[in-house]
Structures are given as C-alpha cells and as structure tokens.
Length: 207
Image 1 (cartoon, one colour):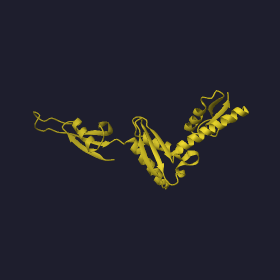
Image 2: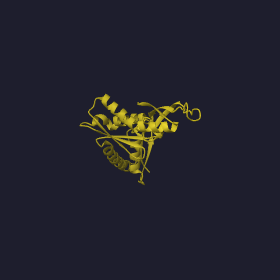
Image 3: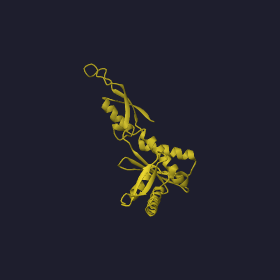
C-alpha cells in the first residue's frame, strides 16, 4: 500500500494534496495521521512551520474482492478469467469465464457458493457499509434458478397427487428462497423450511 508524506500550510491543505497524490476520490477515501501541526512564527513571518501528514488510500472493498478472488483461482490452478462489474446498490458482480467453468461451479454450485462466501468476507473487511458479492460462472445461476423452479412445480404436483409432504435435499438459503417464491401463490400447496444449517431443507406439502 502506497504511503506518502505531504505538507501544506494547514492540515486541510495537506489532506487535499494527499487526495490528489494518491489518486483518491475524496478525503473519505484516505487514512492519514498528523506528524507535525502547522505553526505560525513570530509576527506570522519568522519560524513558520507547515503541517505534515502521512497518508494512504483506504482499501477499496471491490478491489480487495477482485484481488482475493483472482488469487484463489490462481491457487486452484484453473484456466479461468474474471470480469468485475459494480452496481450503484453496493453490489459487486463477478463473472467467471473459461473452457471448463464446471471446475469452479462444483456439484450443485457448492464450489461457486463457497467462493462467493469467502470473497464476501474478504470484501467486507474493508467496507464501511456492507456490500454484496455475487459470483457466477457460465450463466450457472440462471440455469440453476430455472431448474429449481421446474423442480418445485414437479414436486408440488407430486405432493398434491399423493396427499403427502415432499422433502427436498438440503440447500443454501438463496436456493430455498427460489423454491418458496416459485410456489408462494399456490392455494393448494404450502412450503416451509426445516432442519438446521447447513442441512436445512424445503418441505412441500398440501394445504
């Protein structure tokens, strides 16, 4: 991390110079400490001393997330490329590309979910306000969403036909939400979650 020492007639002037030198957006994007306070000399002329500060840019959560994700993928030794997109609602989206994205997706997206969880932790170590990290590979998220919706409809028909409840396999919270949302308008079927994390699952049952 680049650290600079900057002087100015006042602390505010030194801080403004540090913002420029560190190529930061505003003073809120830097950390600084005052090394020397400004001092006026005799009659405001002799012995004047400028303010001196030491400053560095605050780590940017999105940049830290990007750096962490690339390092993990490099350690995995897989030929995957990373593209980052930031949105205005404090969300950072990463798209992973490669000839075999299945390596970073894993069974039912478990590897992808683990990556997303770790990158989220890495990013929010440096965030003043919580930011959301989303990672996708080979459009897996959308394909999985459609698969879960179809699964929900099929199992809802089974529960209605047999008159008994149907238990799905354990799923992460975001996938359980897809099942619940897909069937929430049904008047003949109800859904609820049961079990404890990480083995929590959805139950589909007739009303």
